[in-house]
Length: 343
Image 1 (tube, rainbow, N blue to C red):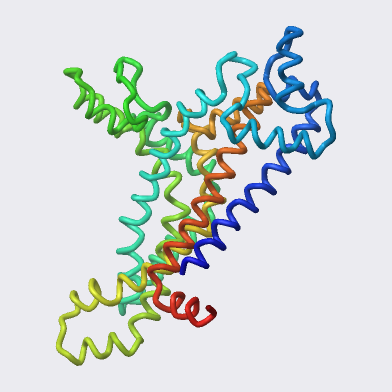
Image 2: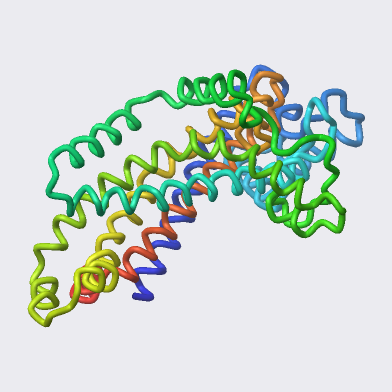
């Protein structure tokens, strides 16, 4: 197991190195001075220019420049934003929690509703129920996320006026950031209106989270259904039925835990699509996360923001994919058996 863990760690470093190399060469193709693209300083003084040349080895060969670029970026030197003239690392740390909060909320919705529907679809003998659930998943998987987001905003935000359609919280509330997660920070606040602020933050996150949850929701239903149909035919399920265990115990203790293993693997495979959908959702609902921050940087030609946004999103996808793969291998007895047999 430790050998497999070390292989995955090596894979993370190798993949990250390739991704940073691509980003380094892409940075050199920006239609501006390379020192400006690297630091965000448009009119540097002679001292700043000399410091940039020294930090990024701009007077050396490409290999030396790449090593310097890798060192500076991984040490937290992401430059300054061209538009705000603030540290890009500080801006990134301010927008990351909002993206994490939205992703976790959307993932929770997908699992909370997707798993029961998948189980129901696999166990129901009614053709109408099965066809209805499968039609729901096919429709949800086929709907473009931008169209869904705009439609939900139009109906529930504009026409019915049930839910807010932009932002993370009403600007009337002044919440001191503690964790960066607005739902948590409102409850940790010492203000008298913290409960009202929590309700307002909860209303703000519903539409973007539901929009983002549609893709994993449909995937969870389909994977859970297929896994449950496979698990229910296994010998240990029949043995549990022969021992007289009731259906609920068989489902919760034996069938469902094994059926959720493929769901975990499916989450790891769709992280890239989930991240790209998240960027679109953040732009539609003006959610103050990495996605909207990155798109704003692209429109404003803020080259340091573009690099930092791509770097952070890519590293997170690589890291989470490998972590999910490790967890999947650890909890899956079949994978462990194959792993030990190969060793």
